[in-house]
Length: 92
Image (cartoon, rainbow, N blue to C red; front, top):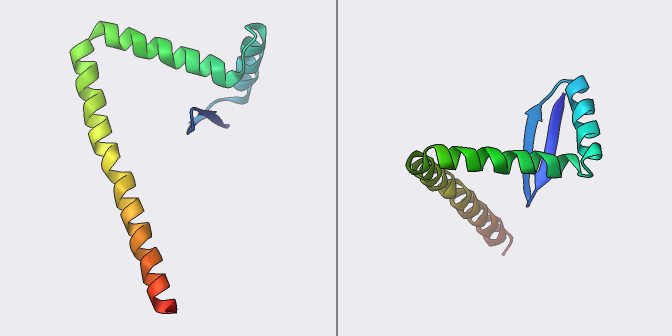
């Protein structure tokens, strides 16, 4: 089963067995949380653990990831602007 969680404007998809998904819903309910909040808490804890384990490597990899992903949205925006302007020019 594909599972979707959205938090802070970002959608995360991952696969999970139906039985595990049901148990996750139960665990979240018992803690008074939504599934999204429970998964967010888990992610924050894992991130904290890895940062403490090797802060330099963690920061280097985060910086590399941000540098890599920050270029893609700009290209898409530029392409959309170009295609949008081109279609406007054809109409006028």
